[in-house]
Length: 198
Image (tube, rainbow, N blue to C red; front, side):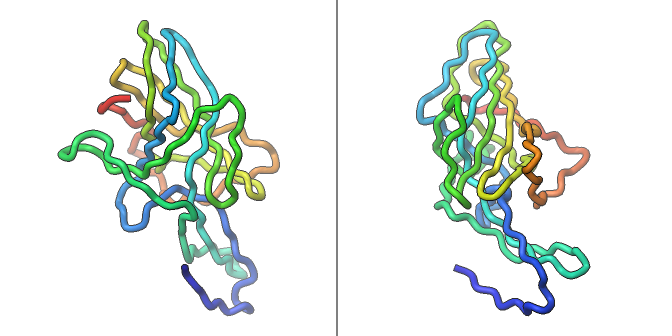
């Protein structure tokens, strides 16, 4: 619980928006989505659907000059962690269990958002996907009232390798983009290679 005392005459507006699913005191920008029911991808197929994902809330004050200043970032949902890979060179991720659906899942206001997920298997083999690891440094979140949307793609390379990437979702006219809390580095890649299994 956090409390703030703000001088009303100096702060005409307060903005509350969904944002990246940070974990407090953890220097990692990776999210692991664990599918409750693994996805079976046939050879040379493409599958699109939806999952839910955890989001944080960021709170900004907006000065009379239009300047935004962040005063807090919090998670409503309990945070869990998982290690992707081995203890020597693995990645610590925020962990979230979800189910792949062909219609948009129910959103819990201030807790979860909708992620449109596209999986492509251009290989000649059937592949089972039980989890997805994404770098949320590159997530684009759009929101309207209590609803939020984002999108990601997963390209299968083999039964043990996949390339994941956050992409821009289809955005209805009434939605607006949340403020990016992780300025993207121009020379860094938005793609992440899952090399420790699917």
